[in-house]
Image 1 (tube, rainbow, N blue to C red):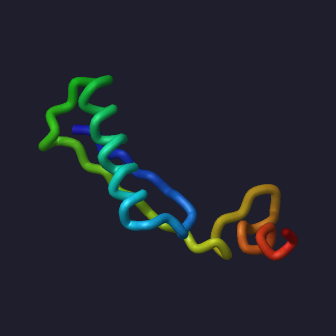
Image 2: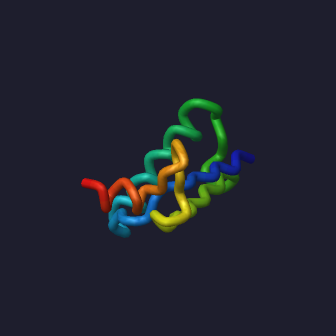
Length: 65
């Protein structure tokens, strides 16, 4: 019963998120033999101000560009 938890920065279209869910779901079926009804995919969209790497948020990096 895979639970796949994805964190991604906000900004994708609903179609892109749907394609991501579909792709991850198919890979779980193919690689670990999970039954489709037992796969759960959670996508968490994170605000750019709440995502930091190297002590710089995505929003701060965008402002510098």
